[in-house]
Amino acid sequence: MFARPELLLLLAALPLMWRRRFKKPANAVAFSDLSGMVPVSRGRRLLAELPAGLRSLAVAGLVLAAAGPQREVLTTEASPEGIDIVLVIDVSSSMLAEDFAPSNRLDVAKEQAIAFIRGRPHDRIGLVSFAAQAITRVPLTVDHAVVERAVLELKVGELEDGTAIGTGLATGVNRLRAAKGASKVAVLLTDGENNRGRVDPRTAADLAARFGIKVYTIGVGTEGEARVPISRDPVRYETMPVRLDEELLRDIASATGGRYFRATDREALRQIFQQIDRLEKTPAEATRYLRVEEEYRPFLIAALSALLLEMIFSATVAVRVP
Image 1: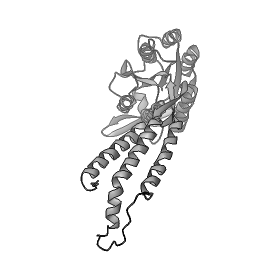
Image 2: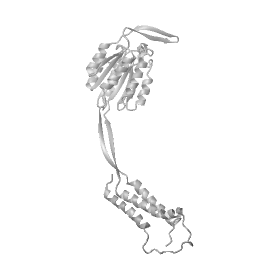
Image 3: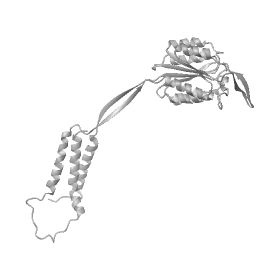
């Protein structure tokens, strides 16, 4: 489209100019015999008309540029209002139980946590791990590559053994309490009972509720007994009873408006993370803009280039003699 389309009528002058150029002049001198004249080759005749052709292109380019060619561009901008999420993952020795065959509980938890992270591109995500103590591995960040790397590096044995659910949750709450996201969520994953730490889990849940933090709790492990490695050289296993305080995990979720899930195998854990992903969708607003971009520069550059070439050819290979 053009801002000033009426100027395009000037292009009609170009055919008239060429018609006049090739029209035989009324006062032309007639020769009775042309045998003494050297014939002009077709190539030289075309070369002689080249400056006029370039001039016509220049005029056409200037007219098109003056007419104001424009292009409409529709832009859609998504304005996501991200959710702040902290993953609180148990790394006590019981997470090595191999009832999520062919992997242990921790490896499967890491795998599914990474899949969850990759599905939340607009959210700030942090990571807390806990055993007898708790530690912030990654504060809230949009650099998900850093969070994924930290999840992959989680291992049993870096913290004193035990299960301090209250301390782990309180550490996650501390990371979320001042967050500015549309909503604040903690995902607590554990396979045991609270047996260490100075913070009562229900007190930590009340604190989370006070700061508007929703806690989703995940209890992992089969029911009954599970095989746990007790040495690596040589590899020795011991069958141990599964002790999971489901009542506590339900109370934590209920107090904060979250939900409790139980995962007894890899597929169940995968589906749980998918459910949490659906429950905590990132709100987003899409704004559409229609902007007009001026497109006169290519025509102006072409016109000026044609004028320059005309000057060069007229002064060199296509010199006209009066």
